[in-house]
Image: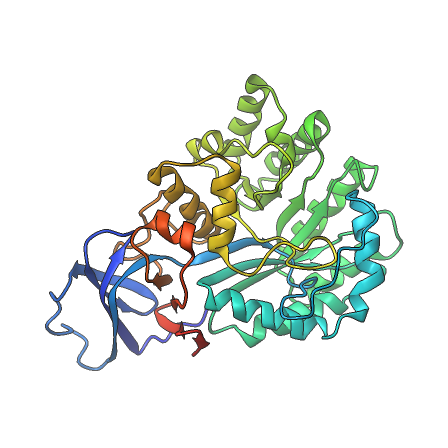
Length: 412
C-alpha cells in the first residue's frame, strides 16, 4: 500500500451508503473525521499539510470494491471476442482449452493483466487477490506477467498474488518446485486445488501446500470445486491441518461448492469449525448451481469475499472488471430483493473481500466510514446502494489509501 503521509484530502458533499450528505476528512490513508456537509471551515491541526478538496456533488459513497478471487493471468479483457472453444465444462477440458490458446492471445500476459487491472480500478476496485497459474506448461511466465501488472498499479490498488497450480500439484513433474520458486520471487500465497478430484491424493496435496506455506511464511488459498461429501471431506482435512499447525486466520477456501450441498446439520458443524479457525471463504456467484448459504456464513462472522474469477477468457465469456455487476450476480442468484440484503451483498463485495485479504475492515453493511477506517471509497451518481447495483452508473471517482486514483474515467 502506498500512502502519502504529508497530504490530506476532504471529500465534500458525499452520501456514505446513501445516508446524510457529509464531508469526510482523510489523512495518512485513514478517515480522520466525518461531519455533516459544509461543517469543515478549516483543517485544524494540518497547517503543514497540503489539503486537496474534492466536491462529491451529493454522490453516493461506498467502500471501494475488493476482487477477492480473480485470474488476471487468463484475462482477454480489451481483446477481440473469441467464441468459447472448450469441448465441455469439465475441469480438465477447461484447463486443456486454456493451454491450447493462451499463448496465441493478441497481447502478452503482462499487458492483458495490466489493462484488466486498470479497468477494474476505474470501476472502483482498490484491492485484488489474483491467481497466477504455475504449471509445467507455463512455468513462471504467467506469474511474472501478473507481477508486472501489480507493479504498474501499485499506487492505485493492493494486489496479492497466489502461486496457483491450476493443473494440480502432483499430476505433472516439477510443479512443486515451480510453486516454491514463485514464492521465493514474491508470491504472497500458496495455492491448491481439488486435492482428491484433480490430484487424486488429498493427503499428499495438502501436506505439500501447508509445508510450502510454513517454509515461506505464506498464507494459503485452495480452490475447492469438489461437491457434496467429497468437498466436505477435503474441507475437514484443510481444517484439521489449520488447527494442528495453528494456521488460524491464514487460510481461504475458494468456491467451496460443497457448502451448497450439505444437509443443514452437517453444514452447521462444518461452518462452526470454519468460523472457529477463522478460515475465509470466497465465491464468484456462479450460475448453474445452488448458491452458497450466505446467511449461515455471514451470520457466523466468517470472512466472505466476492470475485470476478476469469474474465472473458478461455474458460468462459463472463466478467467485465466491474464488481458492481458481480454484486448484481450475487444478489440475483441468491434471490435478494430487500435493500438491506442487497447492501449486505455490497458489503461482501467490498469490506468482506478486504477482510479476506487481511485488512482490518468492518464486517457489516453500512460500515467503512468511521474514523480510523481505511480511506478506500468509490463515488457514483446513484440514488441508493441498491440502485447502484441495478444501474451500475459511470463514471466513478475512486479513492485508495487516501488519494484519488481515478476520476471521470481516467487514472491519476
